[in-house]
Image (cartoon, rainbow, N blue to C red; front, side, top):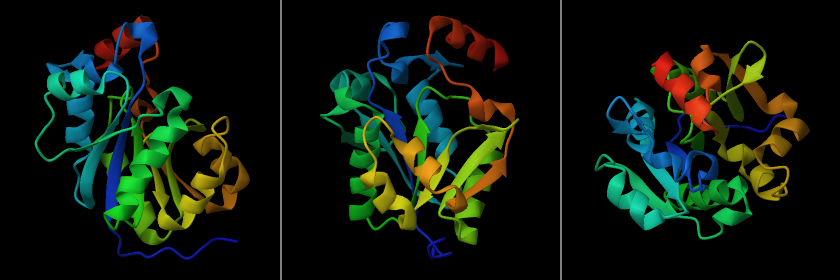
Length: 203
């Protein structure tokens, strides 16, 4: 069953930036691309019409990231003290803030995916406004970012295990998902230094 979703909605974007970044030598939020930190770049590109608020969820070396990321003044911050337990804890920390602020939907975007096409963000926003509970960019049959979750899907997010994460919701409720056609940039993440070099070349 597909739940009802309000089409006039307040959408908050959550940047998941709590990880250690062990394979790249430190927080990925502080990697740079074109003179911007990943975190500042993602925050700027997510500030699209229809996004009411952008919040970064920090964790590992949160104070350092706060000091060094050169974030735009509009970006909110929340700290996930449980980040070592996995990404789901960051999603839930950001979700709690968004819900308290009156959001109707969230966009989830990992900070290690810095190649955001504004048209992809706009497509996810439009899908949420059409009433879909979950909107996912897709390229070549692969899911990308950012992922949109309307309030109707939040209880399912809270019900999954840390091992499942958000993918558990997608597996259990495929009927809730609208796939938004997107360019291949929605797939490009940075897990290693080699990935980082490839992303810099693509830019």
